[in-house]
Image (tube, rainbow, N blue to C red; front, side, top):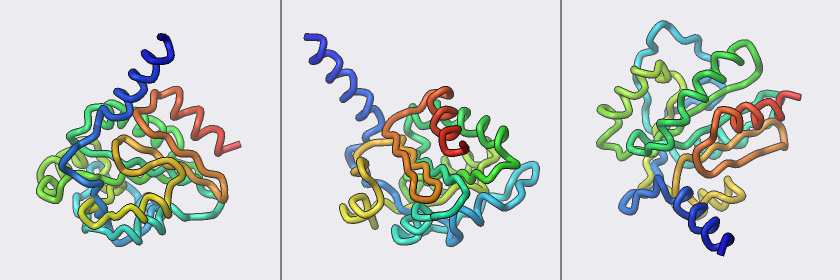
Length: 187
């Protein structure tokens, strides 16, 4: 009985941000995670994020060097995504002088890019870190080629990489979980 209840709770948690009619968006600026994240941020970074391709996102995810790359897939309509963003912002501030790069890949509908996504980016001073991805351009190979466990069915999803070491988290991360995962890459 406990296993059934636990399994049900896990399934509910994983599908909390599943949007039935929308595929995962695949649009991002034409620069990679490193160049996006290395830009110094003014008080409020200007919001201009051109669409990126699934192939470019694959390149962002495949960075392989001594930098820790934290890539979070989110949408502004996703409650758990919005609840975990403050943890990422705190960690970004804490690690601003360390070799850690944060990229947030918006999976919002294209129609929301200049509305909800722009407002979110400006309100959270994350414009320099947001990549827009048009989910209509994604196919199953994108997920199979880039992730061990994620099929794009629900968000939030976080991919962390340093060299050949990777970590994938499906679902919302607590502040403690995020700190623990990133700190394990900094050792």
